[in-house]
Length: 322
Image (cartoon, rainbow, N blue to C red):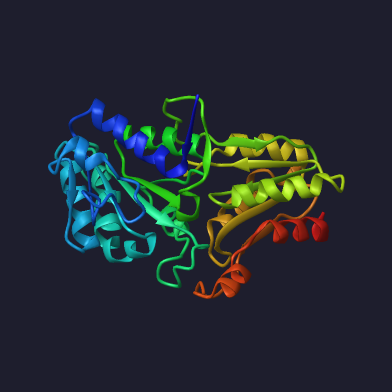
């Protein structure tokens, strides 16, 4: 058993796969000697050299395009973008090439690439560096999307992401990089398998990313007032663990969905729709969603904290609706 930070666990997962497979390499802006924008690739340049930890031009289109082409010809790239917001520049290569190639070639080629995407708010990075855009990615057939919330999940999901023969979008919340946690198992966590972070019987909170920790804090507060809350972390947004969600809904009969993304058009709405369409008979109350306010993320710490949801918002929503 080890204690690691979230960032260290991501790095350890990459290191393990690079040690195992010479076809695995990292590319991105300042991922080499500098160690990455958030220090996640620190030390890997010294260990594996410039051929396998490659600094790129400041062009997300180039980074994604290189990952697509090299993965289609037998390599297993891990592409880092400094912020998920900058994916907009590489969307054509991702959506119209990476996500489509295996299908359009009839399965004759694989596209085993991972794209690391630091997302989320809470670090006063302002409107162009603080978005939660995971819903965009889940909308595209051909892409898999993972979103770890703990060091254990970060390591296990990285191992599975690199092993997968499809493009995997690895969303990581930048405010979690320093979060410490126990890593008990150094092994892959299968994509499409969620996790119950807290057992409960009265209400299910389905949360993603940093909101998992806000949900756990809210559950502790609510426990003092008699609520027995279950916290469910999907861990992968696609494929989604519908069976685990069904089991929890059938037990608690009430659901609150907490995501940091803007509520309008967010993936929380997709989860809500799935439960409504496939598990409606198990519900005893309407599904409630928590998300960011419908505005760009402010730079001001006070305004930012007002816009993004937190444990207090979850507690208030539970008391008001359940």
